[in-house]
Each structure stands twice: as structure tokens, then as C-alpha cells.
Image 1 (spheres, rainbow, N blue to C red):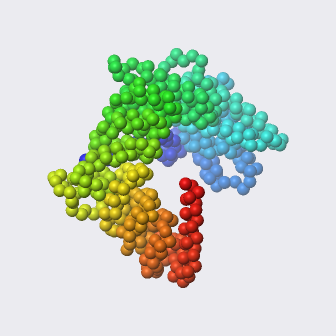
Image 2: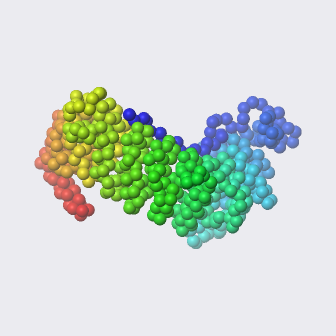
Image 3: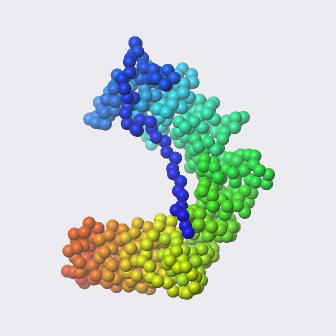
Length: 579
């Protein structure tokens, strides 16, 4: 019934030198004068000569060895930067040179970093665009700009400065001037930068370093495509930074970007946002907008653009992700009730599409808001074909964890009859685990707990030892009442030793112990000490042995009992204070 859900892959940027090889393979003939080589098929572009490439490779090796003191390090940095001077652009655009310079810049003074940027930018700073949009040079500009934050932070922490620190402050003024020069070039060429695969990362670094202090241009006549992957990533970074540093500006940007998206042309009667939500790049931007939006903007997004379309969007391979963000963001508002009433109509179709993130988020928002919990549980029972007859309710837990319907799980061809043959627990999946963990936070959990108590001890051991199932068992046991927890622990008797010897099971056992009464702890300890040699020699169980103080249990039973009673009273007192 249920296909494996799709998950988004994070956007990554890879440095060209990470594949290995520093200065390009093969022998190259050096040009007279030694200024550099021209690579074949590279449009006659000048390249760093082979001797220089070898030099910077050795510099990288020396950096890996470390330095005995700061003076030795400073002399080394000064000497290397002296070699760079006059050919900084060639070094920055070379793979080996770029990687080495990136490691060198954090060790350099602000004056040295500023001088390097000045050479890269040229007299007027016009060269910054070329180097920033280069696959290797862009990394150098990023690294250099990032150094600015080192001195801005130190100046805030230490208002009183020594002579040496005053010199560094003067040097940081040089660096600051170059960073502003880079910023000016970016502002003048904003559309080209933010859509460029390498240049866009320089813009994102600038946004972080400047903490959102750069305002928008006074007049913007050149349109920017939000469907461009690089540009979308820049907008996401800008909004995130502004949300932390300039919340009022962030609020304005969210509104303006949403208005811009809504103003684009689309089919008559269709909101342009419905189109953008299905685009890989712009949907990510809309996700960020939703996550950072305030109540009124969320309400307007739903009322003016998304109302009546949520199920269709949830079924889309890309648009279902913004639907998840909207469901999460609306949980603390009354808007969630409207979203729920619309999405609940398509639960079974969404499950069949494999977009389990939508269903999981719906359950998590129900738990957070404490609304619509019974409605969702009944809808899930129907979707998994265990609502009728009522005797099927006790089968809900393995069905939810495996994301399989009753008919598929129990290999049943007909819907008649209320009993089923016993099937060993299997096929516990990640999203099924997340779903049950969310349902375990509901006010009414009797169906899940009743289903848990029908599982065999072997099934409970399977859950405890499973990467996803262990979280479910722990959540259900720790949220149960003392009486309900006792019934589950009764079913687990005979499995404690195997749980203690399991990497995951031992963690579940510790969670059970932390919430267990003194009598339950006594029963667990009694079973464990019968396998003392096995537990003491096991890599996981030996920690359980120590934490449960089982040596005391064997040799100093009265003292052990006294300690456990004292801990139990402390837990009870602490829980009363929290209530």
C-alpha cells in the first residue's frame, strides 16, 4: 500500500580541490618569464606555474605539522604571503593555491587579509566579481570576508587594547574597507551574483558576516528569478540572518517576497504560489518563508492561496514539504484547525503516495496543539483497515509502525472475522516510528497501550532492539501510568538479560529503570543478577550492571533497597513540583 517516502537531499557545495590532485596532472611547458602557464582548452587562461603549485603544496603540508609558538607561525605566514604578493589572483584561482590560502587566512592578521583582498580586487575593486565567481577564487573571497568577524567579536569582548591590539584594530580597518568594497561590487551586480553557482556563496557569507546590515537597493529594475537554485539559497540565508539580527526587517522582507511571488503571472483563477510550490528551488524559499512567518502572514497565505489545495499539494513530490512546514508553523494558532479539516480528507491518499512526512507532522501538530487528536486516530484506523470490526483495534500498533494495512500485514483476503493469525512483528520503519511517537503524546493513548500489551515477549524484544522500534517502546512505557507500566513490564519478564546485552535494548532498559517503582526495579534486578557473568563481560550490559548497582543488590540488599527508596521519593517530589 505504502511506497517509500521521498526525502530531500541538502544542497551542498564542494570545493574543486577535494577530489585530490593539487595543480593538475601532466607536464606543462613553462613560459619564459615564469608568470604562469596557459592551460589547453581553458580559453588561454593563465595558470599558476608548476613550481609555484609545488611550493603551495609544501606550504599546506607545513601547516598540517603545526607551530611551536606564535612568533614562528607569524613569520611563516608573512613569508608565504610575500610569495603570494603580485600573483594573488593566479594563486586564488589554482586548486592547490586556493586550498592552502584558505588554511592560511585564519592565521593571518587583519592587515594581511586586507592587503590580499586589495590585490584581488584591483585598484577600484572591479576584479572582485571575476574572482568571486571563480570555482576556486570564490572560496578565497569567502574565507577572507569571514575573517572580519574575528576582530569585530574581539573588539566587543575587550574594550581596553594594548599597543599590539591597537595595531590590529588599524589593520582591521583596512580589512573592513575591502569587505565593504566587496559588498559594493555585489550590490552593483546583485542578479548575476545571487544566481551564480560560486558567486552566490560569497553573497551568503557576506550576509552572515554583516548580520543583515545591508539594506535593499533604492531602486530595483532588474528582476531576479526565485526559481534559480543559487538565488533561492541566497534569499533563504538572507531571511534566516535577518530573523536573528533584524526581526523587523525580516518581517518586511517576508511580506515583500510573498507579494512578489503572488504577483507573478499564472493561469486565470490560479494563485502563482501554487506553481512556485511545485518548483524545486522556489519551494525551498517558500518553506523558509513559512517557518519564519508571523500569524497574520500564515493566515493570508492559507486564505488567499492555499485553501482548498492542501491535499493536492500534499500528494505532490515537491509541494508536500512546504505543506509539512505550514502544518508545523500553524500548530499554535487556530489556523491549524482549518488545515486539519482539509488534510484529514486525504489521509489515505497521502499514505498511499508515500509522503509520510505530512501525516507525521499532522500527528505532531495535533499533539502540540492538543486539538483533533481523536479525529486523527479514527482516520488512521480507517486508513489502515483496522477500524471495523472493533476487535481489530488491538492490531493498530504493529500496523502503524510498519505502515502496512491490516490485510497486507496479516495476509488477509477478506474483511470478515474479527481475529487474525499471530504474525511476528516485522517491517518497523522510520516514519512509522515517528508516527507512533507522536501519537504517544496524545491525551488518550489507550488504543496504543492495549495493542502493545497484546504483543508477545519476543515481539517486545524485537522492538527494544530495533533502531526505530526502540524509540516507540520507550515512548509508550515512559508515558504510561504506574499501573499501565506494570502490565507492560510483566510482559517483558524473561527478556531483560537480552535487552541489557543489546546496544539499543540497554538504553530502553535504562529508560524503564529510571521511571520504575522500587518493586519493579527489584524484579528487574532479580532477573539480571542470575546472569552476572554474562552481563559483566558484555560491552553494553556491563554499564547496565554498574548503573543499576547490581553488586550492591547481591551483597548489600538492604542498603540497595534504601538507596532505591530514596531515589523514588525524590522523583515523586520533583514530579509534584513540576505539576
